[in-house]
Length: 105
Image (cartoon, rainbow, N blue to C red; front, top):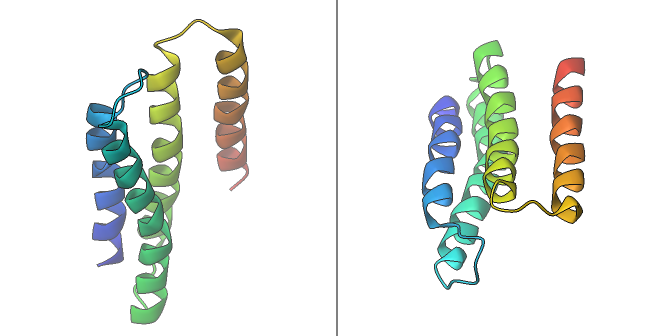
């Protein structure tokens, strides 16, 4: 069950990308709600895995990958619309940090 929740988190990335726009648009709120739901599933899948005793190495790996994809893909997508160093440099730092932290695990 927990792995299905993790897969749902990865699947929610695509609707977030569809609804998000770099321009001010009310539909961005839908993207925000979906992103928050995806973030909350991170806690939910861990809770379900611990409660049901169904934690596994595959689940831990999927969780890690889903976390990184949920952060990196939307950042990369939104930064691709601009050439401002005020957004590119912090985005590169965040993406680099995510990759480095993952490599230590």
